[in-house]
Image (cartoon, rainbow, N blue to C red; front, side, top):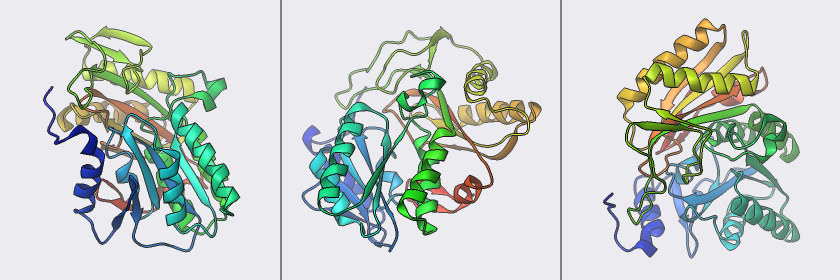
Length: 330
């Protein structure tokens, strides 16, 4: 696959420059670091996020109004350096504490935990939330061991609103962890993703699909011949409902997250089936939407994320959020 870049070592810096050029009144870069910040520094608990690049708009799009206050970026599929995370931590308003939100991958976890300790030594109170929503990566009884994938968008949506509402550090963490525990994601891959070099990250024969494949090409839980959109959606819903325990009378938000190679036409057909099936099962759809918020490079397929709501989480989920790459007004 052909890739449109200049020098590979300048990809991330040039991406940041180009992205911030679209919204210079909202965002700013952090000099001498691969970081991005909100220009407005609110007097509240701040959220700092981060991770490897390559799944845009995750991570750069998750900094914005009602979202995170800053983010540290690593190279493609590589955790951000500890120094970059610490620089972002010091650059946001940290007087009331900082919550780190990242996906549950080893490098990210290690670096954010390390920086949390370093920040505490400088008098900055910190807490970590590691989003763990991929139901195929560990059984439910080991939910905290799961990978973090597209469900981070829903958790971040709740997190940004909770902090904007003025919750204190530990109370905000409690709400965010509740959203984290209530978020479940399942994916299907229809064609492999590609590294910036143009090399495929895995092999997949034409005419086959794989459920539960990791976004770096890690093996999934089921490979089959290509099925109809309805059959694919039904299979994914069965996995999600069996794992989550979501049932008749429960109220949920649903995100159909498209991977980069799959069209809105296809995603809309899938979304139709999801809405129809969940309604038939008596599950209350508080919200269902299609977006591309976690996009493995060049990959075909999509994921379904479900957030089980209650009276506490719903107002935070419904609060508006905005960045150029992440708009949610429900």
